[in-house]
Image (cartoon, rainbow, N blue to C red):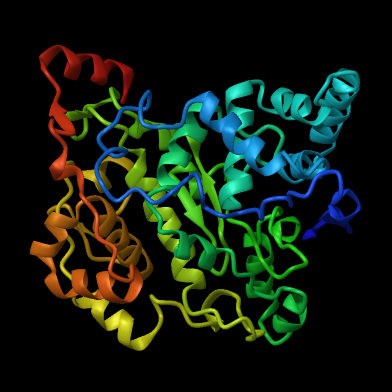
Length: 407
């Protein structure tokens, strides 16, 4: 029996696949979910040297993954689609009711609903396959008017999750308790308490499962003041992307402010950086502490020993002026970030994965710490190993066009 539980809109959906009654007719048992069997770790340059049109699984491969998990689990798709389309906004609920009405006579009505939800069969298949194999949840924001992900975003998320070792993916899914959240805030001044409540994402409650896990979730939204490309709230593993800003890093875009364009899909550094924040949030979690929120619990970036290593590290330079391109960061000096320690840790993590050759030269001690203590001996090939340069300068006409377009 496979059992998964999560609270959805005030009640529990118990995700159970029973097979004992069918053992005589079909001896094979359902495959355990979330095996990371198909979306395996990629340590070479085969994903990072690609454009947004390359490097991801074909539709036939996605269907193979879906079939592997569903073949002995007749109810798996139904409950998975409920998880992947879980919303509280009335307009979302109205859409989903309409989709179910349209799909009621289809051979796979739940798959049909997911196709309509994404308005793209390839995106729906990728979302379902990623959920089955890696426990990653990708969905629209509960804010109905918020810009939405499309099939292209799911493809880059697939490539990004494959740069994270499976043992760290599982670590991200640890859940911190929030049942006593309000009691924990009782002694906090009311003004601060209000700010904390405002910062608490709406999707947080619905993404914590009753088996005490909390799947990594990615949703579109609007970052702080519309300037932040992506953000992770302290203590959580929900990543919110401002899609327009995020897509600036897609290959072929022009940037007059930094005078270059990317020849590869450079959204991966952003994605790996944000996943690093969730790893920071959950790395030392012991499953017991009640006071988990904000500064009340231990993270890599707040642990005295690791924070010393982070502060002493000397970040490498990217093959582009990455920070100037995507973030309003005043703590950048000659392309190196020297600001908040949480951001520096996320950047060290991203550099270890994507420009390790440069980081090992720039900060050999930090490189060895990441290799031995965080990545458990796993090492990567970075952008410098790509057969062609990953960026190129704008020519005169491209620069002129970019200025007119305001890019």
